[in-house]
Length: 164
Image (cartoon, rainbow, N blue to C red; front, side):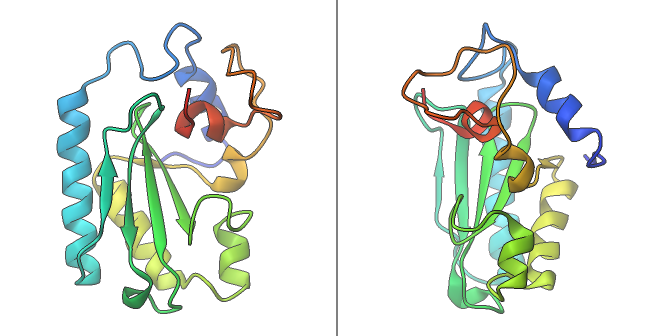
């Protein structure tokens, strides 16, 4: 699923239901697992390497993450793909979430190759994920949900990929 960058903030607000913090009301755990398995298989095929994955995270709005090892990327930095339990949202990061302010900074610093990023994004879109830039997810959260009080400055990333 492709979304224009201008539509993404509205999508985040649409998916934000204060009654359902960890997963959406009509959460399809099995369907999410099947799609995530397809993502792992696709990245392993595209990069010709086993990609470690964690899935079905407890007490989190993140479903799971898959890692493309650094030795399979042009720049030698691993690529981490995080998948939310909400609306098939996905986040692509060089090294780890928060290691850079986003993929643009990672590309500028020579840690993320354009072709590698395009390959990951293509796999995500073809599998029906909505890729949300880390830069947007790190903006201040101003939605209706009450996020845990231990989060000093809540972000949209905390809302859709965080632990509760």
